[in-house]
Amino acid sequence: MLEALKGLPASSDPNLLVGFETGDDAAVYRVSDEIAVISTVDFITPPVDDPIWFGRIAAANSLSDIYAMGGHPITALNLIMFPSKKLGMETLKGIMQGGSEKVAEAGASLAGGHSVEDDEPKYGLAVTGIISPRRVLTNSGARPGDRLILTKPLGTGVLFNACRSGKLPWSDLEPILPQVAALNRIAMEHALKFDAHSCTDITGFGILGHALEMAKASSVRIEIDFSALPSYPYSIDMYSKGETTGSNKGNRQLVEDFLNISAHLSEAQFQWLFDPQTSGGLLLSVSGPRAGDLLSELRGAGLNSASMIGKVVSGSSGIVLN
Ligand code: CO
Ligand code: CO
Ligand code: CO
Image (cartoon, rainbow, N blue to C red; front, side):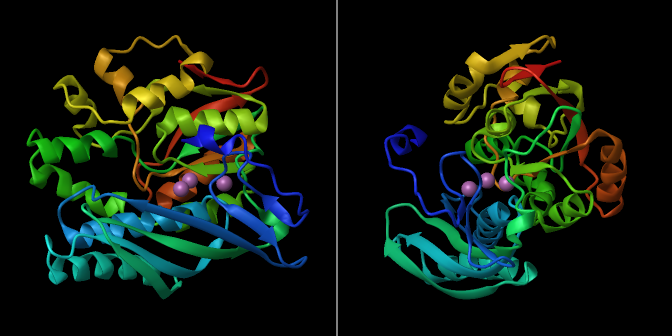
């Protein structure tokens, strides 16, 4: 669907600091020398049946694009598509309760929204954030010599599907939901403290898709160490058991021409690389000498899965998986 954007004329307004051309996380518009506004919108189908967890995960996922730019969310609007005759008001209330919890945790204000009838529920937020125009964390700032840090594990896509198809019991999925629904706020604040050069969040295109966007936007080559990639429990197992997602094939096609694999991977490990994430972590590119300290701080702040997953080198834009 990104293809459809390609023919559209780019804005010529010099105050639009980040538009759609670089496939970044959100739009950034300079209002003054001190303040730029960040705009983003995202909505998803239910990853889990529990309405409150659906609301929390969808809201954290929407807020994440503000953090991925280095900003702070200030207002959020609910986007609701809901089959009110099929599912009751209690379900809708649960979704909105979960969403509003996360907006409050982010320190933002829920300020309105819009709802329409639809056959399948969908929920998310349109979020406005603020940032200093001088401190925007785009996906185009990665430099050779940087190290890459990923702040959450991978594997949500296949786990949600496996739970739905009965391959994974709810009792094995539930323990990871607080981490899935965790805001990327703490990760972003520490990244700014260590002057991260570049940032994006890992969502639907998976780790390789989003890493490739960063590599292309920054005109660098990214090397990823497969054994360093953090995974949610059972996620690779589920690929071994034949579970997959509707996005894996497309995510693979998106990167295969730019991907060089020297690591020896099982078929399940290979498939897992293309798993789409919902409310995934931040991918941070930070100068080599500072990366170790940033990682220790992130772990000290409770982000126990944060991992150093690779490095940035010069060369044609692409990914090498070792
Ligand atoms: Co994003
Ligand atoms: Co997004
Ligand atoms: Co960004």
